[in-house]
Length: 236
Image (cartoon, rainbow, N blue to C red; front, side, top):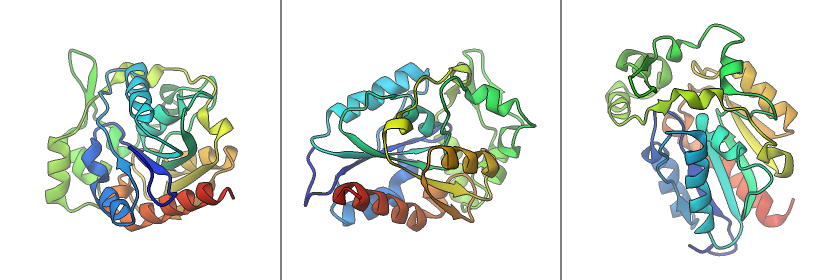
């Protein structure tokens, strides 16, 4: 996979209860602009397995690569640490941007769960699923309900043990960052997103959207990714 017209490659990392197709509207727009885009599937069986998949994808990129992570996808990108081959910038979309020594579990324990996570169904294998009502009404609240139900049907469950994984040195310490705060998020509290963005010194935008911004507000997500791509391309 190679860049075209000097543009960076774009790798899009989905989060929990989603899959690569959640980026479809953004992929279509980026491809129309001439970007080489990859939006792979992540097993979500462990953080280590997800990071290994991301490294596999990054190894296929030839040239500078911008990585964007949504939700738990931000955890995957962050866990690359200082060893992030080809990566020249990170875009967080309503995502976790933990610091060293933190875990998602510790963050969630600081307050009551968001409405989207109030009734998680953890199966006998330890994978957490979102019930349809919570998925449609809270996780993807501003997505057309017909589409949201399809998204629920194809959800990728998360090995709940992943939320206890403690972050090492975060990748954002050695990369320029951009952050889209979803100010109507019912999954990751908007205030937590603002704190993530502030401490990493990210170029930040706030959008009136629920959690799955790349589905409900793809143009806003596209604009931030393109701004990041232009910044890394020009070296600014």
